[in-house]
Image (cartoon, rainbow, N blue to C red):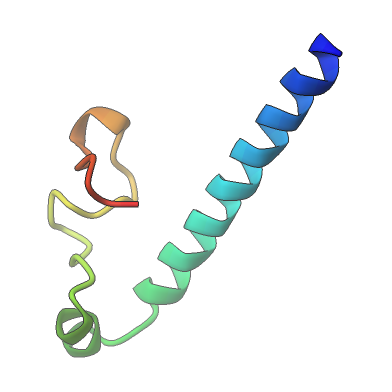
Length: 62
């Protein structure tokens, strides 16, 4: 059973990461004004998830 728990945990993590990247890509294609209106971080901000390691991400995002 250890193998199934390990595998299912990694599948769930992979799925969350894939969904997050998909959302980032979709939001990144929106015009800057629209992203600003809905409160999505700009690509150069420290809150942006694209291209930043975990040490720079806010724990309150996602």
